[in-house]
Image 1 (cartoon, rainbow, N blue to C red):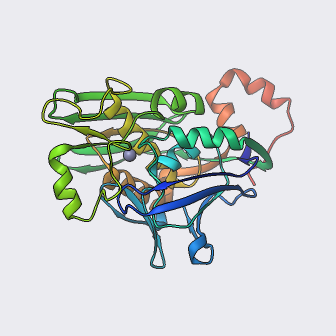
Image 2 (cartoon, protein in one colour):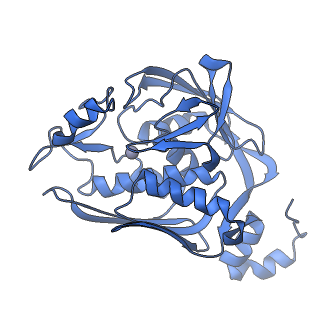
Length: 305
Ligand SMILES: [Zn+2]
């Protein structure tokens, strides 16, 4: 497996959910080993790598910050890029927040489809988790465990007749993400709207970009899935895990977690190299699919570069 980028540029524009600032976003191809890099074109192309070391304040969305330059609400776009297998890409943006669009990752998946994928001449690297790591806060927790493929399981529990307990588990790939998670939208409770506005949040929120839950129903139905809430949380989790910077060979389980726990997990994981190793895909495949081991022996061996 080789690294990828997009084949051609693509653009989208819209308002940011929390800041209400209107922004223009353009995806551009990037060379091998660039990773996923945001560039603030309104600030001399200042680059902010989508990596754990640049995670800043995290509450209702995940924000990156580098040398005082911010970029908010990265999770839906990063979930789409990560799940679609794009290793290298520039995300040029002229505002402080990624457009929320319809509140899901579907518009970003469509944009990536339009851009196409180009294979690069460099081996893809994976971060293979060797030992478990868990982050716990009260009854909320998130853990990452060794596995031969990238899987997530997400459990949510909200006291609401339409939500309750929902659990979603998928092996993350472009097709599973596209069909099972990408269309799930962000949501909020009507009772939280005024307090969030007072905190300076959801200034760009509307019935077009978030599901609003009333006391016993939904203000702007219909839902796209009966368990759209659990699916959206899994989408958010993948978007935050993208901040590891390379594809994962690991199983991740989140129990009533959120952006804060997700990003703590990423930071602690990256801070302890005894928990993981970086491997090229050929090694990953030989262990994931032992049936191919003989076949691989007949191939020229590939050294990890
Ligand atoms: Zn979200």
